[in-house]
Length: 301
Ligand code: MN
Ligand code: MN
Image (cartoon, rainbow, N blue to C red):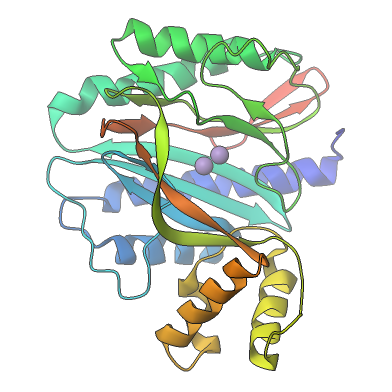
């Protein structure tokens, strides 16, 4: 997809905001920090800087790899000695930046964190338009394994489109020989995950993030219809959290019941929490890149 100058401008703006907020979030993340406060701070800063969240900020601790955002009234705090992934999405008029970093508080975890960080750096150093997705995976895998850790094989980078965080193509974190497609004009997120576990994630039945699957008004009350319409108008299929829609409901109970009902009816999708299969610790770094002709722009660096 060839991008216009106007589109590149918006993508760069989203990237600039995401980078700034990521750096501010790192400074705020300490043992004892409330996850809810951190999430609200991050999402408020995104808006103050002129963007909108492309998805609810993911704050994933230790063996959690992705898909946890604090819920209404969340009492969780950052634990001592933990490994914390902060994954931030920003959009400007639907043009998305997706970036993540890992914070740790005990030097014993330096190696694990360095492994995914180095993997991303090495990929960036070797990027060129037309690079094959599996060659990126190869670099990630070799870097992480050479440092004594494992990449997470069932998590991957992805292509990005307007209002679409995962637009269909995956960039593996290992040399997946069936992923020989080439990165040409378009937007992509590259996100190596490293672990001291077995190198796979599994789903846990905790859902805090949702997105619209299809607009269907069958058997919905007028209140539920306007909730759905509200999300669609603002976000299309971009993910959302219950935290953003508190005001539309009398109480949290009815909000959560509505979400459960809509999931059952196949109107919205719920993203289960992803944890490392063997309970291993997980680190992650992520940047968004634009490939435009012969040029590569890293928007979140
Ligand atoms: Mn991300
Ligand atoms: Mn991503």
